Length: 457
Image (tube, rainbow, N blue to C red; front, side, top):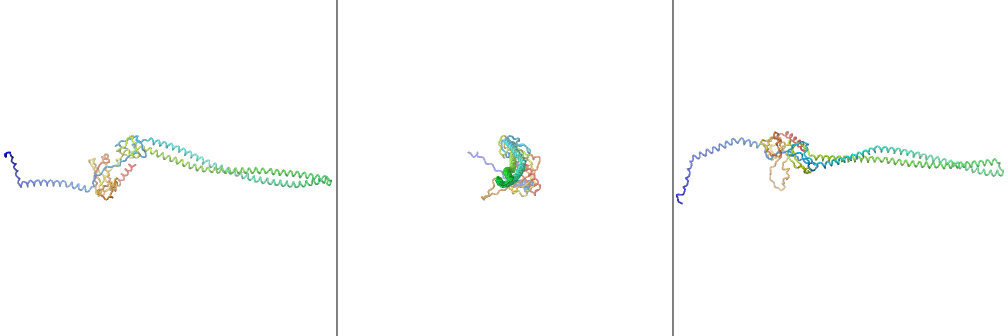
């Protein structure tokens, strides 16, 4: 290649003059200093305001809108869902029917126990009627038995007295008759000897006939008296039969008295029957009470098949559908009370200084362009880590310090946007430092507690 084809190098530009460079550099530096000065002058108020705000407020974005969400499910009963009367986002009133569990087995149980209760009440009424009858009859029977015993004892006393009198009378008569017989026999023996002697003397003509006749007459008279005395003795002996009859009568009266005494004892034992009947009535009444309690429990279980809203609220979730089987305690849907809506902020322990119940709060809810206003209700007494499902284990000696967070409940000031608040919305919380208002916080905490108690019914 020829030397003529080689391009010549571009000539270097002429170097600026030193005075010009200094002037250009001085003008740029001046502009920069002016811009920085203006920026500092403009930003200083904002920086001071920002720094002052940050130092006078505790700020965290670990905060959420919360409300007490209550799971609604069957109590004490289980079964298939036969009716669901609400959908998600429906507003419900307290006592409104939400879901119905199949009531057929529980209704049958109620009817069965109602029938058992009627039978138990009928049995109790019958036993009470028997008790009333016994209480009326037994004293009357005992009184009759006592009177019969008294009559039997009186009859026995009379028969015993009659037996004694008859025995003494017969014995006396027999004794007298025997004495008369003995006397007449002795006289008869004498008269017989006189008769023999005077008859013999008369035959020998030793005495007159008249004397012999008198002896015969005396003999015959004495013989007649002996026969009469023997008849009296026989009659007195025959009277001993009256003693036997009286004795039999007395024995019969004694037997009748014993029978009357046993009848009285038997009648008095019926008092035990009254006691037994009273206890039986008590048992029947307890059976009625027990059946009534079982019926009440069955009726309560039947009522549990109708699941109603425990408080006015909004349905936020349905877990079951028509025809599903719902065991006891399984949630079917969830409700929350929009009146009990608040913010829970999990504030770092390093930011608790200056925070007190009653302090004002700025609530920047991500779902809204404008912030809400609020106030601190209370600051929890424990950090959230104390309630973690997996607690920290420091026994191994390994430890990494982590800033703990303390739950703080914040009341939300109501405005026209209140109905649009939803549980779970993210919030940035700015709590103003200050002494707070403990009395206001106490009243608001009490008001929230009352709302919570309504929710828990």
